[in-house]
Length: 88
Image 1 (cartoon, helix red, strand yellow):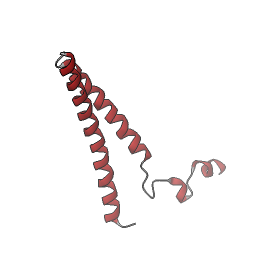
Image 2 (cartoon, rainbow, N blue to C red; image 1 turned 45 degrees about the vertical axis):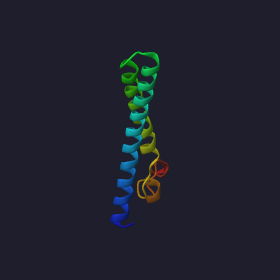
Image 3 (cartoon, one colour; image 1 turned 135 degrees about the vertical axis):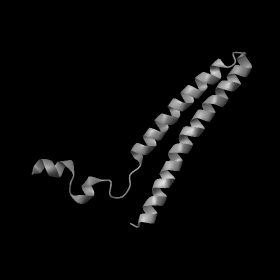
Image 4 (cartoon, rainbow, N blue to C red; image 1 turned 180 degrees about the vertical axis):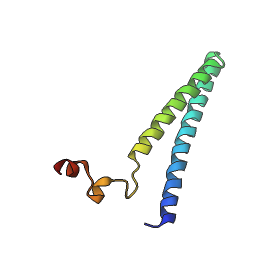
């Protein structure tokens, strides 16, 4: 595969991870702000929303990064899988 294609794929994954983290944090902050406005507890629920949104964003980004595989990342393609090494 060409180097430009790998670069584009890597940049795309990076933008996806950054977007997931940012949007989750913002959604948590907006939900906390809305609850603060309704309940009159400013700014405590917004602060909690930012923390919980950030944690949810980190978890989503981690899961996405774990699920992302690039060609050549899998050792079994090269015959170097764990099962093959155990047989030797």
